[in-house]
Image (cartoon, rainbow, N blue to C red; front, top):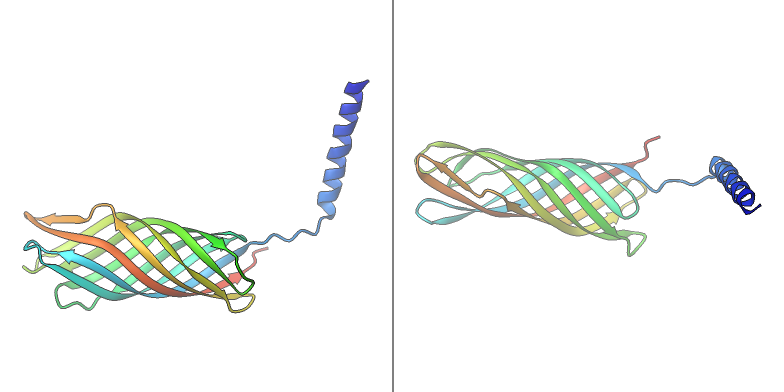
Length: 195
């Protein structure tokens, strides 16, 4: 008798949940994201004479991602514009992914903290005018504020800290060392719903 009641109860719960799910007007709190980012980047380079130079340059990037109420993820690409007296850089590229947790302390803004990983690739001429191609993986973290301008646009202001996993580049016995990278940036984020 109790087995029949259990089976009947399970059958009724399944039918009720399917009926409820069909009539539920729940709206998922998620958005697709496209963002344009501009920033200021600082990187230290140590040459073979142990002289450390600081390279400061601008970056511009594109980020594509998605977010729920508390989590946001981006796939990103950044291009650095380095006008440097010490080295002649041909290019500086960063591409990777960021995962961020959003602290929603207000309806008009939130605070975020996150982790990132990716790859950096650059080319420069050293002091002896040898062209050097350098690429390495990176890990990092970021934090900042996200201000909701309206339903479709956010303004993001943040800082990113990048740890280069292989910071040394040696060519013909001459070694250059790249220090960790610090970035300050701002983004305009377009939010939209995908059906």
